[in-house]
Length: 284
Image 1 (cartoon, rainbow, N blue to C red):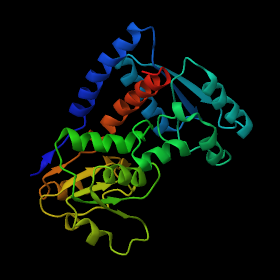
Image 2 (cartoon, rainbow, N blue to C red):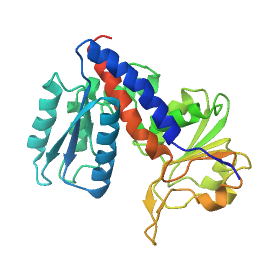
Image 3 (cartoon, rainbow, N blue to C red):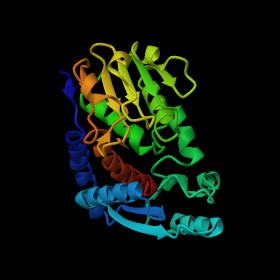
């Protein structure tokens, strides 16, 4: 059986380091603060919000929720985000996506202040991600993937990595972060002719496509490392990832579980990005 690499030790280590940084900031009279922007009350948003608030409280980051009605207009929504841009006490803004269909996310990308955009929605941060500019704010979930690989000493330089899923939330930014570590990256998506063939050639496979148990044992090379970003609920009501964990675990060197893997680290990265944004805004 492969090693099951859990997220909690990674999250706890990040939290310990953050708590020290935050104490130093508070000693200077600076208190990092996160504003969560939520439209409506989707169950997945509420679950993530709960985890984010809990993690922020543990490390000492202030956090407040700005809940908007599902019927909010585009103008009202943008005005609300601009107000947070201008609030000097707020250092990080997290907008839950996807937004309701009547709200234009493209406009939001150009409105949210890049220096407060802690989940890499702004084109400014996307550009810095592409360049490997460390002053940018990288998206939380792909960064959590990288932190897990780093924590468990997974070598990436020169390795073949297949990323399954090409969303702007996980797949594309994960691929860029992997490239920045000198990995050779292949991205698979819905139009890829033979995703299984691409995956089974990889030393590391990162999966984030939202299809329950899509990745089978035959897709994975003996001794590969598998990071499963997917969070799904199957027909029996059980939470599962995008990888058929029970069938794959005996073949791999390492694999993240679902739940208890990448998701456990994401809220720590969120808090870390708030602290980073706070320090940058205070020229520290």
